Each structure stands twice: as C-alpha cells, then as structure tokens.
Length: 105
Image (cartoon, rainbow, N blue to C red; front, side, top):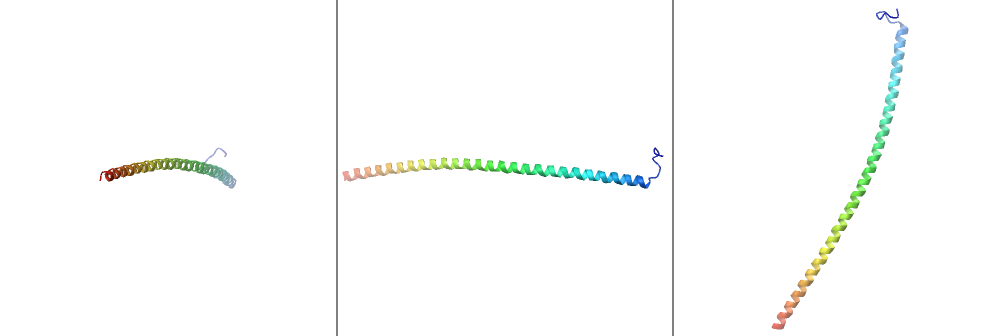
C-alpha cells in the first residue's frame, strides 16, 4: 500500500509527519535567529558609521564657521580702521577750516 495515496494514515505516519514539522520549525527558528543576529550586527555597524560621519561633518562645519568668523572679524577690523581714518581726516579738515576762519577773523 505504499503507492496508495487514499490509504488512511497510521499512527506511525502521523508521528513521522509531526517529527518532520518539528524539525522544519527548528530549522526555521535557527535561520530566523541567524538572520536577526546578522541584521542586528549590520544595524550596529551602520549606526557606528553614521555616528562617525556625523562627527566628521560637525567638525567640518565648525572649521568652516571659524574660518567665516575669522574673515568677518578681519573685514570688520579693516572697516573700523577705515572709519577711524575717515573720521581723523574729517577732524583734521574741520580743524584746518576753523583755523582758516580764525585767521581771517
């Protein structure tokens, strides 16, 4: 009756089927655990890489910021010197005009 697919299943057939299902579930469980472990490892590695990239990015932004601040500071110092020079020239011109007026009066 081995080729007969309509024969009723025996207790041994049922036990064999249950054993096969148990083995399949165990293999699937092991495969899922391996997949989970690999995914967790990849996620941690990705997180570390993102953290390193973020730290590099922050340092680059800081460096660019300090360069920009330095340039602005340099420009402001130059503008301040120019303004002082203009004010001194205007004061000297004003004093010269007053001296001229005083000499004429």
